[in-house]
Length: 311
Image (tube, rainbow, N blue to C red; front, side, top):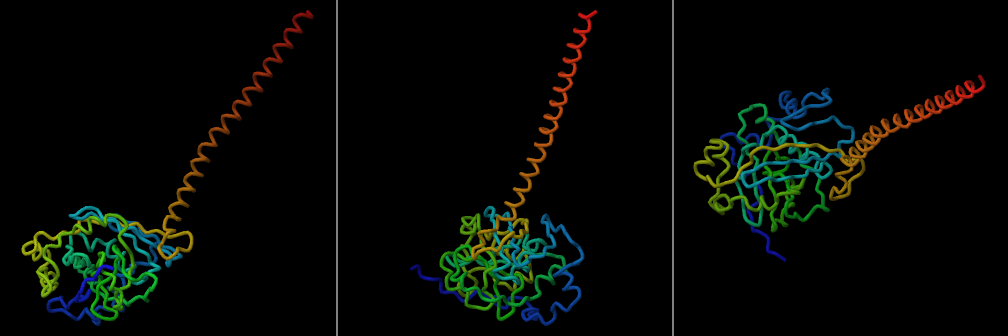
């Protein structure tokens, strides 16, 4: 069995400059009307279009899943999120991607065979920034999803109920993850894992374990800190989100994710069939009418000939 990476943990490491208050969310709780609106929006809207994604109001929210397709400097990546794995984590992660929070942000911690961590956005939208910094409750553990497998995704955290916007993708020796309360998988990479593996990792882990960037300066200086001092790090470009509701109960690995799409395809095929059958039916009716007309004309001509002979 491969030896697991001896890691300091997948924490937020206190790197928030002079504003550590949001680690416990005391000044950013959901009771704040602005934060609540940012998190949940207007529930009266049945459908919203957000940055190239379609969000539909649904009844069976537990079965909701999402396909996230991202362009990155290392190549395209496709991720699949499952709400049944971690409802709170799913809702936050999907919303962040929909609102473009990760666009152009860097993969600031890339540790070979262990993980890649990201999630400090550069947005200037203050409402989105507040939303991203608001902490969410931990989700119940899912023993059947452990140990972490390569490509699995989870939030980083600093203690109970500390998840906000930072998350990670596991590499092949991250099996020891999943013990901390915030380390509950909400999704996995389904395509482009080779690109995730090729993310630049030459700087190693954060100090003192490596020479990688520290989170405090990222928060304080933004993209300029990375671009000036760690110019080789890869980053997101843009992402799109498609939400899906399964028509049946999913199994543990979400194998029924295509049911809704398949159902839609069946409906489309039936519609095509109906569209094709309509003109065919019309054709046969017209042919029948034409045959009756020809037969009638033939009968009339024959009758006329008989009448001529009798004269």
